[in-house]
Image (cartoon, rainbow, N blue to C red; front, top):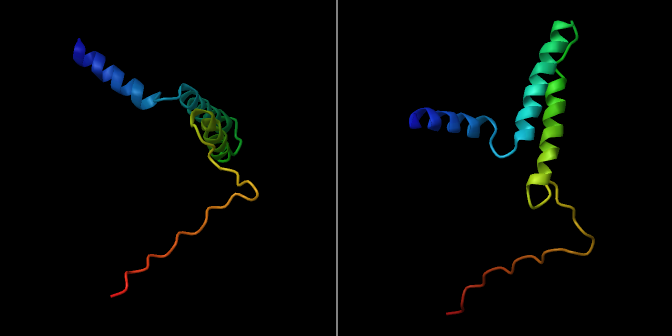
Length: 87
């Protein structure tokens, strides 16, 4: 029974991972693409659009923004070149 539980735990972690909303979004996207295709609508655009939305939704899961904003006046000074000692 422990092997079956470990197998299930692996697949749960592999499919669901850290964010179950992304897994649900992928399933909805695949089902929506299938539904649109069955209705005769060209549906190639749905998954890339959904991918962008899901990636932006992951911003809430990370501690820093995906696209950091530069604030005016805050610049990192250039590193000083290494000057070898004189002989």
